[in-house]
Length: 270
Length: 354
Image 1 (cartoon, chains in turn purple, blue):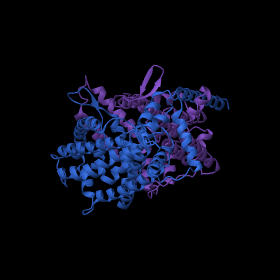
Image 2 (cartoon, chains in turn blue, yellow; image 1 turned 135 degrees about the vertical axis):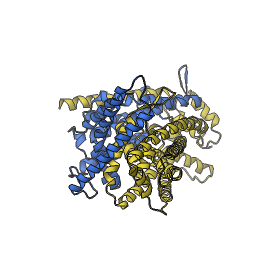
Image 3 (cartoon, rainbow over the protein chains, first blue to last red; image 1 turned 90 degrees about the vertical axis):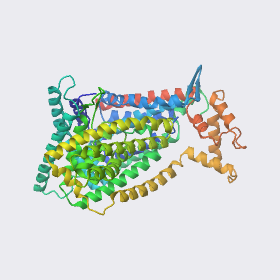
Image 4 (tube, each protein chain N blue to C red; image 1 turned 180 degrees about the vertical axis):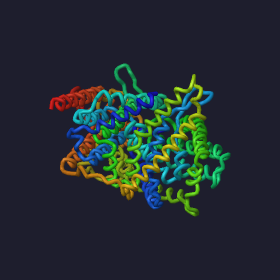
């Protein structure tokens, strides 16, 4: 497992990608959130043996990655980290689903292997869609978009608050954790007892911090909502973005483009 | 215990989304009504605290492995069910977006599994009953362990139900249950011990934190019943809408057509539908030498006499037929991938040059 500091750095890097200034970054967050939802629904609504029909969906993450000018290797690495998990879950399918489904020359491939591959492809697509949404939008913008899409204000405020203090508290946690590791020896002193008081102290400090924050907020006239300058609106560009991608996803969901292409090349009837 | 999008069907994902958003809306209204705006920063900062606490590992005695805090029960003990549910949900949103822990569609499931059970079942019905209205330090460990185990068992069972009813994995229900429950029994015990350690520590240092939330709930209120009602209404509504939409896709349509032809309610060759049926038949009949086609014929006992050999009633055969099971499907898939990445590469070059 990566160190806490490593995780925080990784987190910060994804967070900072959202400060980019490409045309994709400038689109209103609501459009991007909605397109991501349509994308996810299209991908997961395929039946469990769908495999080649999923391939055209790679177009969306690829285009976002390119137009958003995001670091490819970073996202590939991040998605790759989750593949062992997807594979572990998918690997159970070949054990239970042994019915032969595809014959490729001398090889018989069972339905289980096909659905296992399908799970892995789904995982790649869905994970990258979520990460890319953050990469081109940024968490605060997503929260504001959610609020304007109807999420209860209390929850939206909670998300923004959480986000604002994650960096502060994870760094504090990382420091405490390192201090404990430095004082332990051969696994001694890393048990539940020391964890209990370590986290308990962290909790007490957090609690006092919340009190201070509350007083500071009251001093600045907090009435229960965060006010933010409206920087973007849902205009023609957003509508085009939303409708264009959504139409494409629905067409790709209903037509297997891979097979059409393949039949063009091999001459088999579509 | 985070569920992933890859294993979820839209109907299950949508239903759980509705359930969780309903509960979030209910809790938001409740927290707003409490008029204790001190809770607003407290919830936010405690969410961030949970994040930090989850990153700190502890070694589990006797196993050589290490674990980390889940924290659902801990937050509920500190904040009370409504505020805790919102806080847990917000942590899960951040995890889904930044760490791809679980997916966006699975978020509804995860919020429900990891938030609802500790906050609205384990805490009011187990923890509070054992620990008492005014928690006694000696009872806190027992209460925390039993409540944590119960919450995680329920959560794990919900994961099983959601995954199996999605039907993406082939894992049978019984095997999955046997895999999940014992693992989460162990996880639950550890979670309970850790929660007890933290709560006991806080109780010693500042007892009013632990007691305050236990007393805060007004008497004669039945949060669980209200939440369950809201959840049921939302789930039934969305489940209905989602499955209605889902049946609009070709699989459902074919099934409906098959049903209709069986009952002979299907009248006349309407052009659109008939054309679609023929197209479907062609799809299924391509490359007839391959095995699935023969199997399809053999199994197509309920086939429509007009569309000979077409296995209308057999969903799996339909799926087998739809998959690009031939060379052309695989070749086409590879070409698609190459095209997609080529397009991305060119776009990237252009945007870098600009």
